[in-house]
Image (cartoon, rainbow, N blue to C red; front, top):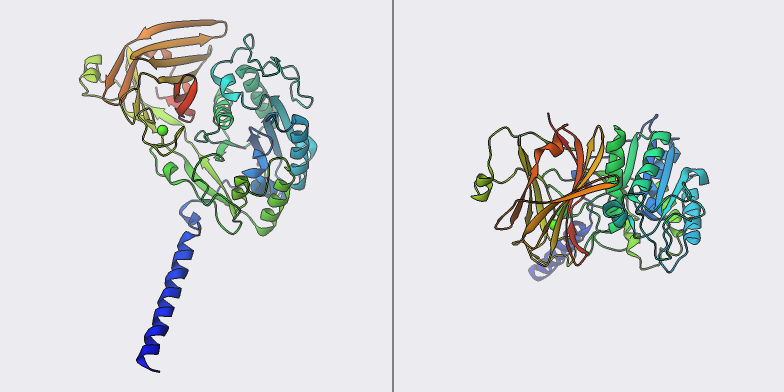
Length: 451
Ligand SMILES: [Ca+2]
């Protein structure tokens, strides 16, 4: 063979190999970086919590199929009625019954709570009390959904929590699968908070796994129907301090097929171009958010130490940068981390953002503290350079101004240590809002004060 042909042949070979290597590197198949989970065994009982009627299959159709195949009891809780102005709750109820039937569930395995689609963040943060319920767009203040678990329950955070607690106590699950708090859809983020609240309050000690559905604009990658690909965690939520621990649940070909068939039963939701089809992959993806332990600080840190910038409360957890509204842009209000320091008399909560605090934004730190005498809900708000602490018990509330230190892009709020006098568990979430619209928010995290 002439040298010229040898060189040509070699070039073709190199180009082909390079192309193959490139194509291979584009397939998201590196799930082996993550452990397998959750593991389901004889004796397990699986509770799936879906904010809307279809989340149960989009993110969990495979694991439900696996459980049914292995005779592991499954219950699905659908929190809202799915009333999205285009589709009636009755239609969506029927789709869920048909879809889950394809996976092998019976009608009685699916529990519908019937709260208003889109209202869950309001119920959790602003309409907790039964006596001050949320008003739905149709003027109703209580559940009138015909399939509801508790008919006539008020549209309130405490009603919803009580429903979840009843279901957890009656079904007695060993594994609860629910939305991750990093999900950017408000009902999903709030459902996550409700589950953290209900499981902490009931002392649930089984395992908890979360799933992720909404993380626009680039996840899942690619955002389309690629059943031969794997679903891999978003880069911005990997390797964070006290962040989610990802696990991969691989599906058999049979489970993949069943999930796809089931998803097609949700006719009003699954259109051919839907990005929801991105979740028909070779695996499902779950994450665990561990309980964060806070130790009491016996060093005599003073307000002056914080004011001089000598001290910053230790980090509780970090939040992704470039998340929330206006994805990807470096906005000053973007929350980066939360910190906490519990001293004898005074304690501090800190909030770090990308830039200095913006006067047009309101920053809220929300805590639900579980004490032996009852749950106390606390909101610490920073608005236009001043901080306030509001405490809400059932039927009572107090509000007081509290010291605020601003050091560059960190806000440090001084709060009384007696909030934590019983070394309680509490759940905590931080958000930044502008004229009521959420700019960024962190997941609800479970924290335990160490004695
Ligand atoms: Ca953030």
